[in-house]
Every structure is written in C-alpha cells, then in structure tokens.
Amino acid sequence: MEKLATFLSGVAKVWNLYGSSLIDGTKITILIAIVGTLAGLLIGILVGIIKTITVKKDDHLVKKLVLKIVNFILAAYIEVFRSTPMMVQAMLLYYGTAWIFNIRVNAIYAAIVIVSINTGAYMAEIVRGGILSIDKGQYEAAHSIGMTHWQAMSLIVLPQALRNIMPAVGNEFIINMKDSCVLSVITVNELFFQTKSAAGATYLTFHAFAIACVIYFILTFTVTKILRYVERRMDGPESYTIHGSQSAPEAEIRVNLKQTK
Image: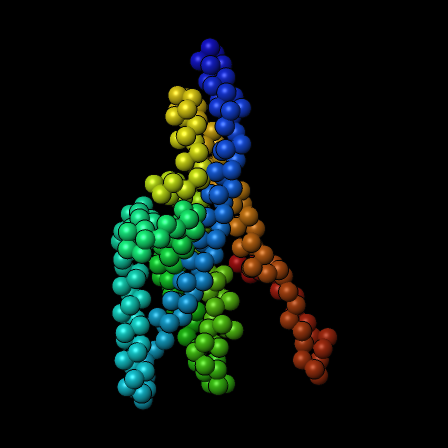
C-alpha cells in the first residue's frame, strides 16, 4: 500500500506540473494521425486505381509505355517506403531538406508529410486488395454501358471496396497514432516527446510513462469503438423490403439479414 501511495503521489506530481504539456502533445498526436491517415488513404486510392488499369492488346504503344513507367515508379515507391522504418524516413526528410535545399521545414509539417507518404504505401496495397475483392462482373457491367475505368472505380467499385477495407484502414489509423512517437527524433512535440521531457525534468520516468500509457490506451480504445460504429453504419440496415413488380405492387418480400445468415 505504501508503494501504491508513493506511485500515485508521483503520478499526481507529474500531472500537476506537466499535465497541460501532455494534453498539448496528445492533440498533436491526434492531428498527425488523422491528417496522415486521411492523406495516406487518398494516396492509396489513387495508386490502387492506377495499378488496376489493365493494358489491352489494341491499346496504343504510348499508353502501354506510360503505364509501364508509372507502374514501375509506383512499385518502387511502395517497396521503398514499406521496407524502411518511418523513423529513418523522418530523419531523411527533415534533415535532408535542410542539407540539400537549405530549408528548415516545420517539424509538424514534416511529420504529417512523412506519415502520409508512409501510410500511402501501405494503403495502396490495401486498396488494391479491396478493389480485387469486388466481383469482375461489376467491372464488365460498367464497361458495357460505356463507363471509363475511372468512372467504374469511383461510382461502382470503390464504394464497395472501401467498406471491405475499413478494418484495415482503421488499423492503420491506430498504428499511426501509436507510431507517431518515433517522430520525436525530429523534435515533434507529440505525446511521447512531452512525456520524455516531463520524465527528464522530474526524474519520475515510470510515473510519467504510466500516464502516457493510459492516454494512448484511451485514444486507441475510443478510436476502435468509433470505427466499429462506422463499419456498422456502412453495412446498412439489417432488414429491407423487396418491392413487387408494377403489375403486382403488393407482392413484397421482407428480408432480415440476421435470419438469412
């Protein structure tokens, strides 16, 4: 009991002295995770759509060549950013721009850019997998009525693919929220950086990081619940009515998805 009381008093001391700093760090962590994940998702959607463009035999030679070059560049982008740690990428971007262009980039802006690009490399494969999970008959139906590849993707395929990949997108968001701590190497004042500063100033390392652990848990737990709610909303209603034909409008069928499973 004595150790518990000492621990709680240490936690209270850290919070009283640096609680506002920890809250500010939490806000920055959330900002980087949200913006980085959304921007990464947009990059992933664009790359995923391009990588699913098929080359036909009657296509012009220039189109085939351009697609090969673009696909090579995109493949290199995905492999490079998935094969190197985000911490190293952050160091290269932040200090590389200062060394090459003699420009000192704002640390938070650099963090958002690197998280977005890193997430985009993972999202590209996630989106591509979601697109490939949609039945090919829907592509053929869209093309048969004169839709282009982009129209078929944006109007028919992507809305369904996004529902399929929502769990993976949510997982990337949670990963970004936790992995934002590596951005402390470029002096981003996120939660880990502020916690380390508080621990160094008070010499209460265990107590400071216990607070950080609780904050991270609350963030990820809350986000998980919100994403589960969004997924259920995207599933639509559990029951619906199939209306009868014009000649027999009274012929309706009530379908309950729970009963059909």
